[in-house]
Image (tube, rainbow, N blue to C red; front, side, top):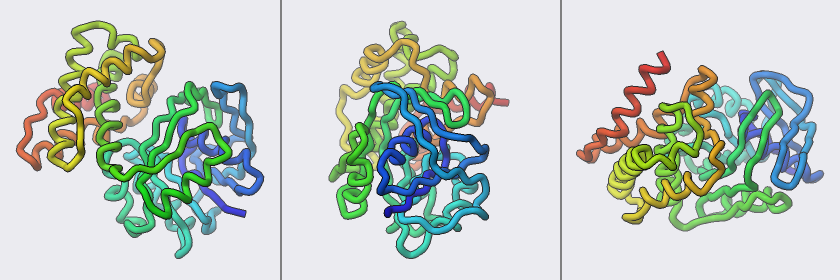
Length: 290
């Protein structure tokens, strides 16, 4: 039996854990701050429930075959505490997080060769500990290689489409382009439908345009029409969709601002690329958070 620990049962983590737990050959543990009795996910195909083991302290953990990190990007240090107890010489670590610094974020806690970065697109919203609405089956994209193929196999029984790519860097920057535009929703505290307003769409395109410039400098292959594609995607999706940055700000929680917009400013400065729109968004949201 393959043992799996999912660290961070937020919207994505709870969804992933619930689906993995449907396979009797997988022993699933959830590492959480708050205990809960079971996972309940409202999926596109109907309700899904699971009762994985729930741990609330790293002291309760022991080594597993896979540690799947789904915490917020700013929780790396706390996640490191869990990894110290979950990882042994045979453990693989999959990082399912936002941004483009999956490996760099966790090398203080785990050697880089153990880490499989993943681009996740599973639209979901958490209403309470263990309770999630999953809007689409979603996708997970990982780099080519043995570890990537092993992760694909873990999800073979689920409707989540997990696949490998030979150009993970480009995939990660394309996802960042989508995420950086979502800062507008956090600023306005309005769901995805606000992108149907033309002035808002222009701001989103400016954010993505800066992301494209910096991503290309980092080695990603990004198309010229990506800003318009991102806006079109927001407009085509559910008007009431709420991204995680928006949800976190509305709830008064910390935001993944650095991983979604700040990284564009930081890496842009390294390459001498101006990123005034992302810098403005970061400044405004930081001030709002105070």
